[in-house]
Amino acid sequence: MRKEFLPFSRPTIGQEEINEVVDSLKSGWITTGPKVQKFENDFSRFVKSPYAISVNSATSGLHLAYLASGIKPGDEVITTPLTFISTISMLLALGAKPILVDIDLKTLNIDSEKIEKKISKKTKAIVPVHFAGLPCDLDKIHSLAKKFRLKVIEDAAHAVGSKFKGKMIGSLSDCTVFSFHPIKNMTTGEGGMITTSHKDWAEAMTLLRFHGMSKTAWKRYSKSGSPHYDIQNLGYKYNMMDIQASLGIHQLKKLSQFNKTRGAYAKKYHQAFSAFPEIILPQQPSYPHTHSWHLYVILLNTKKINLTRDEFIQKLSEQNIGAGIHFKAVHLHTFYKKFFSRQIKELPNADFASRHILSLPLYPEMKEEDLEDVIAAVSNTIKKYSKKAAI
Ligand SMILES: Cc1ncc(COP(=O)(O)O)c(C=O)c1O
Image 1 (cartoon, helix red, strand yellow):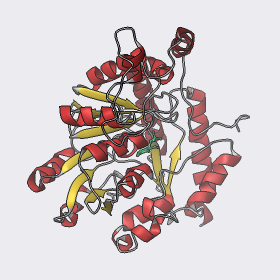
Image 2 (cartoon, rainbow, N blue to C red):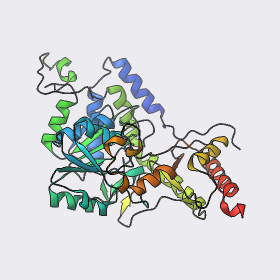
Image 3 (tube, protein in one colour):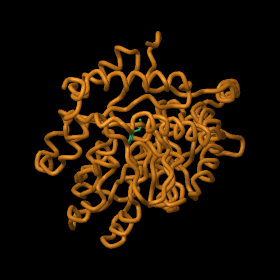
């Protein structure tokens, strides 16, 4: 058994990132400035979207995207229950009504075939979440959006570098929001990015992310700037700092290598576990796509194993292997239950997933030996507690 605990996730930070942060610290310009602008330009080129607006988290990015799309109190917005709370909480913050559509148990993404039934006169938008980095069925979602005149805002917190039919996630819908939280495929410490092809949305979000102010601080305090400013809207304090962008500039350059390693590790897990009926492995849809492999999520088949999901995680922990749960469905959380009491019966797959999923360690900082340790711990636990073993 390995001696040290292998955490579920860990960022990969190189000397380039460290040097760039130190450069910012020494430069006298720490907050939003030239490095944020460079990072936005680099990101916009990377995803092939005309506008990229950096923010201090994907949560604030979702808030701004929902505001820019014109979502108002009472509007209905269709999304998945198997997501992090921000996808939903930012809708509730605007007084909108999230409508949850059950997931497809094979991909853990929203079941796009079930969306149309949930569209009403009040529906304003669809928010697909590319779970674990696997692109949702965007053809189906865009055709529904066109038919019913809905906006599409992608929650791509997991999907930086993913592609749908050869096109970058971030270039395909009205708006797309990415996260750079430390467990994500690339990090800025905390941070996020919104991409859009709508000039007016980009302008609105740029204004809203900094108090509704007409000029950025960078422009106010630079030699060519003017110290005057005007507040034009009720805004927020959601801007990214140059210190964060210093990380992002270099993380973005390394992203394709990071994602390649994640993909290679996911393949090894797949090969190692495919013979075990005690676990259900992530499955791929038939449309062409590139998966960013943010997470490797398995479902425990409790008909075949004498352990609950939480006991299974405990057994891994006893072997010094960390694991995560992504996610307990939103409607099962204490505060959120009341909003979804009428919808709860229609979400059997999300309920099942909430009780059976676990995420295994998957990140480029892991060594091959770490991967072998995870494979050994999972395989040993399955063999020891399999119902087959008990017969
Ligand atoms: C699907 C999803 N959406 C949104 C977020 C929010 O991201 P952030 O922590 O950058 O606000 C997360 C974070 O884990 C997420 O998993």
